[in-house]
Length: 86
Image: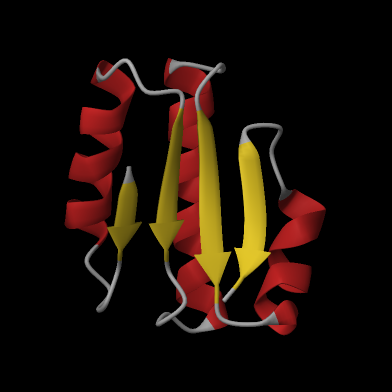
């Protein structure tokens, strides 16, 4: 499953992740490359933490804008996260 986030719409991302947590899928890819590094960091870290608490076996792949955003998030990376650049 792939989700593209065009604007900051935290509620939409939460709903997609809630659906993902209830599904049989083990991995979801979420494109947050349109967000600035603060919004991207917040979105990725908070939603990954929620997913890790609910079901630690599910993995989230985040697509971010560039290496700067990736390097900002990497020190806080959780075990259920994978971060790639666009």
